[in-house]
Image (tube, helix red, strand yellow):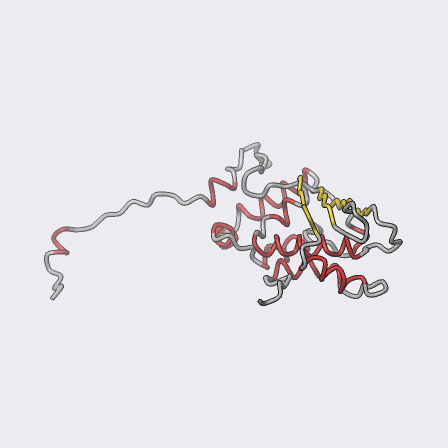
Length: 205
């Protein structure tokens, strides 16, 4: 059986890049092994907070928690405007894809979508290991990366922002409501017309 890989999409890879160049006593490879062998017994994602239970050397699973800085109201509005003004971005989101160009725009605007380091993720584990991340935290982080591979919108959800379903109505400088992103990416019925006289001249033989 093929081993589970993490970071198979570009957005999944950006998430696990927070692990790069950080290793304490071989904990990251052990974290990958924990992520693959079922040691992570449960994961709950509630907005920007993640809680998990990870089986270790003790009978009772260790409690793991992570928290990602939530987007501010101004950051949410900026994201909304970027998406609403880009037909290409809307088409990609409608196809359940996260376009790299959106990430680049967010970076130019000073909005950090992916964590740049472990320090940016509030992390705690009930195990006695002094390192952050310990192997239990690393295992949970890898599995989050796996979920992001499957659902790129989770990257926004981890900042407490439901990209498609929970966008607040933003206001323009003229106090005009911006339509919800959900309505923009939802499929719309298209009118179809044809000309009977033209069809009569088509040879289908």
